[in-house]
Image (cartoon, rainbow, N blue to C red; front, side, top):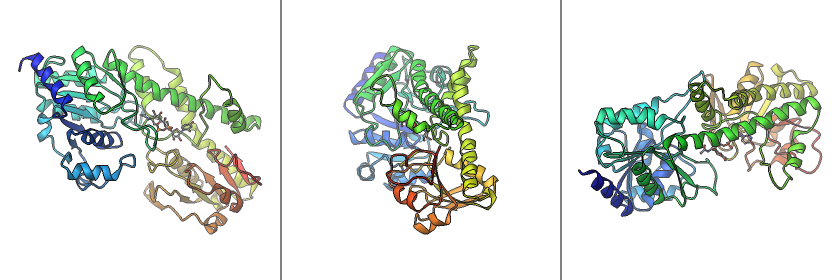
Amino acid sequence: MEQSSTFANLQTKIKDRSALVGVIGLGYVGLPFAVEKAKVGYSVIGFEQNPQRADQVNAGDNYIPDVKTEELQAIVSSGKLKAVTSYEQISQMDAIVICVPTPLTKNLTPNLSYIESVTQQLAQYLRAGQLITLESTTYPGTTDEVMRPILEQVSGLRQGEDFFLAHSPERVDPGNLRYTTKNTNKVVGASDPRSLEIAKLFYEQTIDHVVPVSSAKAAELVKVFENTFRAVNIALVNELAILCDRMDLNVWEVLDAANTKPFGIMPFYPGPGVGGHCIPIDPHYLEWKAKEFNFETHFIALAGEINRRMPEFVREKAWRVLNQVGVAPSRSTILVMGVAYKKNIDDWRESPSINVIKRLLEDHANIVYHDPFVPEIKIRGQVFQSVPLNDDEIAHADIVIILTDHSQIDYANLVTKAKAILDTRGVTRHLQGDRSNVTLL
Ligand code: SAJ
């Protein structure tokens, strides 16, 4: 097919919603995206390697809290969305969006195995007229230097002429009810103008504001910078918390007062560490790439080191509180409040709470936990079930450690009933009444 007609044909299909959309990876990014596309009339196929997840989608059984179950069920029953586990139908797709994980290895270096394996499979079926966009967070150069060569060499097709390739970083904030896939500004970049133009058109069909940048690398760096910004600022307040502990100052009072400044500041708060699949991970993708340019990203390295130190700091503070109540850690019963990596979500992967619990288990403490979002966790083969939050459980504990500040917990009752509380999230700091049994991080 002549190049310009390929391009024009794809433009038409995107505009009239007849374009077939493929989403590779139906996780916390891919499934909400697939639902948004299907809701406006596109036929969407989710290519999901996990058969259970594919079955759940096809049964309208929602597993992503940010997706409205009734919406998923409506588009699945209307036939607008289905999930498959093989790539057979990928060549029928007009637009393909890749939303696969980009984890770190144990040595904090990028693990592109998901992106590489998806790209290798995609390349076998690639045809003229397809748009491919990568949404996974990764270092600048992944789209152009890793994906493009595979796609061109295996298929013999050329980017910008036969197929189109762009990077558009995901900006999903799990649990955020205000900013959704639809109303969160979306950056998109590509290394040739036609890929950028067609990718921008594609995203504009379901996202209120699309922000084009000059290259895929710029788009990749935008996202990694966004998360580095958070990691560094969280590390700054975590370091301040450790210093305030040494200086016998209340870091929460200091930060609350600092945040009364009406300009030039942004609230970040200390905690038991940094969890999730973004902030503790993404900055190290940039740190790794920078070394190629003989450049040390000191802020990223330092932020990671400070944030990873926080679980140990919590352990030390827990020892001090146990000392005050006259119980040795090895003889203590500790009620942990919250194992999710941040409040009001159910995700406990990479959660700092797990790192704290591991350390307290090494001290032979008896650990029980309560998390309304997480019914069960497994640590080093040991299964823990969330206990009901009742006065007996609270009274039975020598210390309650608040590690995740879920909004639905009755903290006033906790303060009234608990022998001692270590609050690592500052969630009790504004409560009225006697809080002499509470130690803040
Ligand atoms: N944390 C702190 N102190 C803070 C903020 C966060 O200790 O002041 C901790 C959290 O408890 C959590 C970790 O850091 O363990 C990460 O928290 P996060 O608020 O950054 O939430 P995430 O990991 O869900 O980050 C997502 C990211 N979204 C994308 O990558 C697309 C991030 O870019 C968003 O900015 C972030 O949500 C958000 O704004 O909530």
